[in-house]
Image 1 (cartoon, rainbow, N blue to C red):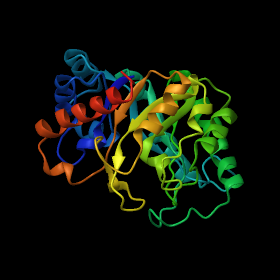
Image 2 (tube, rainbow, N blue to C red):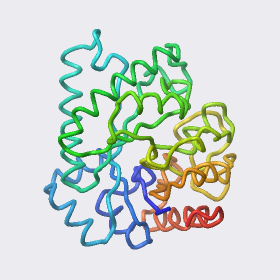
Image 3 (tube, rainbow, N blue to C red):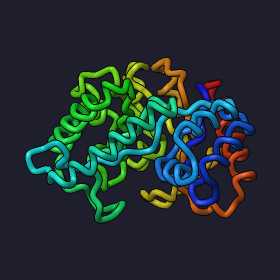
Image 4 (spheres, rainbow, N blue to C red):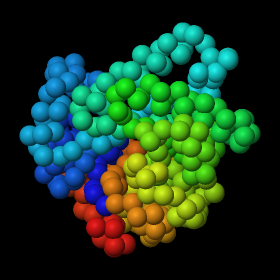
Length: 287
């Protein structure tokens, strides 16, 4: 596998150019750029300068993070104004993915906005039906750009799509080679708060577009529970072992949302993220 750096890891202490330069210096093969950091960079730069910066530093872009969907999208009850706003945002994301050379966009399923641990509120069948409809429509819009969409199951109670199997149904419904999966160690762990990753081993490697690697503290489902590799409650050997069964050898990107890390300087944090991620992948025979 190839090592990637997801900009969420340094979200509170760095910016796009710093992430790119320090990520390349540390040894990362790929970087996953965030739309918020891109927008901030574009206040004083042009889009072409992102590609020039990446080329200069010798680090490759991967997925842009992230597009957040909602249950009514492209359905009979969709609000026209809300849909127009979403489609504008998605079109801009597709253009950025193409122009930066990233070529991928992470797509997050509908969530309950009431809170991280508040149940989504729809049954599994309706949730999968909604996300399948959304995936089909997004695939149509992505096709002219040649951009791949990485559907990411999120095991948190607030999520509509919590398992690999549910997300895979949406991938199949899209009927497009541009639609695949993102597998995140913690997001899948949250489904039952354990390291049962057996569904992954049944996938074909072509169905996996991106892997997010992280560990976590035993604090219950939360965005901030993620931590760098090296210690935690997640059995990353089980996670990576199932991915290896598929033959996948693409990007494994470190992604955490831990405010504690943002107290560090990016010069401290980004090399640490590289060392701990590389050590984990080496430990389990993934490099």
